[in-house]
Amino acid sequence: MIRRVYGTRQSLRGMRRVPPYLRHVLATDAQGFWVAESNTKVIGFVCSIVRGSIWFLCDFWIVPEFQNRGIGRQLLKRSLQSDRPYRITSTYSSLYPPAMRSYIMLGMTPQFPIYTLVCRSKDLKPTWAAEREIKICELDPTGSQGGIREAVHEMSSIDKVARGSGRNEDHELFIKRSGNRCWLAKKSDRTIGYFYISPKGQVGPLAVKDTRAMLPVLHQAIESAARLHPGLTIQIPSPNVESIRELIRAGFRIDSHAIFMSSREFGKMENYIISGPALF
Ligand SMILES: CC(C)(COP(=O)(O)OP(=O)(O)OC[C@H]1O[C@@H](n2cnc3c(N)ncnc32)[C@H](O)[C@@H]1OP(=O)(O)O)[C@@H](O)C(=O)NCCC(=O)NCCS
Figure 1 (cartoon, protein in one colour):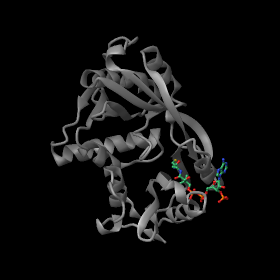
Figure 2 (tube, helix red, strand yellow; figure 1 turned 45 degrees about the horizontal axis):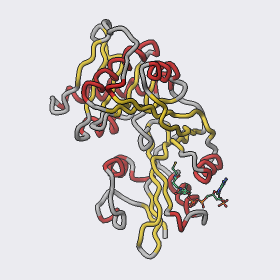
Figure 3 (cartoon, protein in one colour; figure 1 turned 30 degrees about the vertical axis):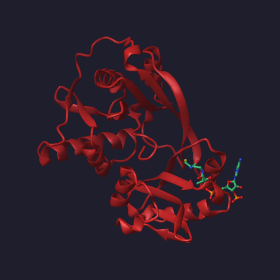
């Protein structure tokens, strides 16, 4: 049986642990969330979000003993039906052949790898000079609602350039997520970029409006993260190769990679570092 999940505790019955990002997907776009059940036990699920004109597949799993029986295809078909109009389909794909096949058959094309880079903070050897022009200021998540709304609005307008769509609702999650910290990058009092650092030392999402600001903002993000955490992780789309090169020179290692797939190109990936596989 395949059923749509809505944002209630009851509707997640059968899923043992529900990570916060899935609750967020349910709360912000329940239409793309479907589960497959066998004898009332969840044996697979799919969830997607629409942000602006972009449909993004967040997660897609079938338990191994039920794979290759067409269940995934049925889930995907339902998840694509949304009242929110979108023009582009996309996902962060694993390298697992049946997964890639599913996306290719939906009309998506492999666009570029996304590299996961890691570094122990004590091994970091920055090769860059101290940044003077760009100032960073940390956002206070307990600050005034008006201040947070304004920052979210500014970040979303940068996202429209860098990742092809705004995402106010995701910033609200990132800002409030326990232990997450968020900085705005400013030049002459104008917000030109932003970055987050997670409680586990992950840097991202990070975005800038102008590609020339990418490396200066990245430097500040890495330096801030290294002061806070013993180990750093960052996931970078390969079109942002200047950042990859810069970090490798500074001591980062390539840990793994995945493939970004979409029905067409969008955004300006040189200006973007992703939040992770689930919300991109
Ligand atoms: C990806 C996944 C959700 C697909 O679910 P599923 O129910 O097995 O998918 P389906 O049965 O609908 O489709 C799988 C298709 O891949 C095909 N396939 C299997 N191996 C393949 C290969 N090496 N190359 C190409 N196609 C392959 C199958 O034949 C099947 O196609 P068919 O129905 O036309 O015969 C499931 O395999 C899974 O949970 N994988 C592990 C988690 C994962 O990688 N998730 C994706 C994250 S991006």
